Length: 145
Image (cartoon, rainbow, N blue to C red; front, side, top):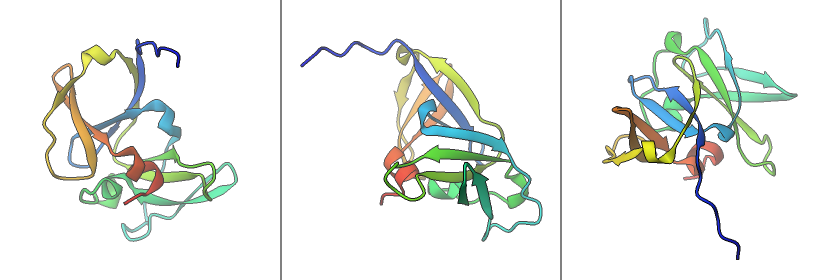
């Protein structure tokens, strides 16, 4: 078995959550991020997002992460997450409040912190004294219980 070289940098995306916290995930989990106007929609039905021939039902990122759904007027962005290419559809569309921020970081910049019990997150980390929640990617991408 070949030796695996340590990772020098991680390409990440930072997504804001409705409660003011932020989530950090691998950039490769995202296929697209677009601003969307949710005016006239209800929290019970965020509609569908047309993307590359798919009509993806829009879910709330906060709700998928086990958090309270923010008011629909605060939702401004849809992220299309890559799911499983063998599932139909192979993507998930999730609405969130704010703007996604991409970046590259070095793993040594991160420090693990204790995770609160609220939400469906696998861990939490600090980067430059800011707290970031790390999602459970199985649940986020594949809707696995």
